[in-house]
Amino acid sequence: MAPTADGRRTGTRARIHATALEMFTTHGYERTTLAQVADRLGITRPALYHHFRSKEDLLTSAYDRLVPELDDLTGRLRPAPAPWRTRRAALDRFATLLSGADGAVLVCARVNEHALQGLPAAAEVLSRLDEIAQLLAPGADVESRMRARLALSALTMAAARAPQLGGTDETRHLAARTVARELLAANRKPDDG
Image (cartoon, rainbow, N blue to C red; front, side, top):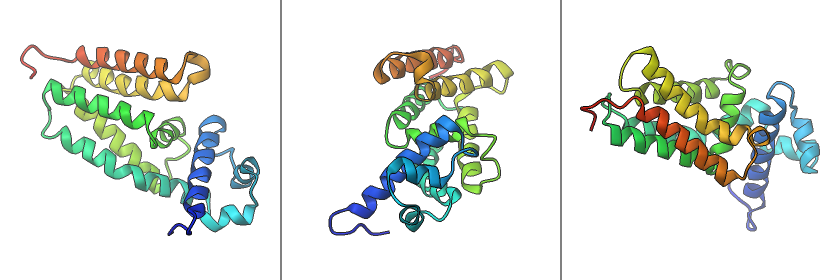
C-alpha cells in the first residue's frame, strides 16, 4: 500500500505491526485478537481491518519483510561448514537483526512457535531459523548443534525476557551476545578458520 502524502498509511501500519507483535509476544498469538490490538492503539476496528484482514495477514506481512534478511544470512553461511569467522559474523548479524526493526518479528516467531505452526509464512521463517542454527554448527554431533541453537536462543531471550532478566536493552543485548559467542566458540575446531 502506498503511503498518503503525509505518510499516515505507512505510519499506521507500522504502529499496528509494533503493537500486535508486542501483544502476540506478551499475551500469546492465540489469545490476542485484532479487536484488542485496535483497542490498545485507540483506533476503530474497521480502521485496523482496512490495513489487515486477519492476524495471519498481519503476521505474513511482517514475515515477508524478514525472509530476505534470513535468506541472505543463510547464504553467507554456505557452503557448510563455514569458517569460524564467518559463523561468528553471522551470529553477530543475527544479533543486529534482533535489536533492529525486525527483532520483534523474530521474537514473536520464537515465543509463539507452537501456535504458529499452521501459518505458512511463520513456517517459512521458523524453517530458516532452523537452517541458520544448523549452519552455525560446524559438526553434526548433538553438542555442536545444541550450542548453535542455544546461541540463537540466548540472543532471542535478551529481547523476549526483559522483565525476568532486568537491566537495560543494551546490557541485555551485550550479555546475550557474549553468551552466544561463548557457546559458538565452544564449537570451534583447532583447524577452523
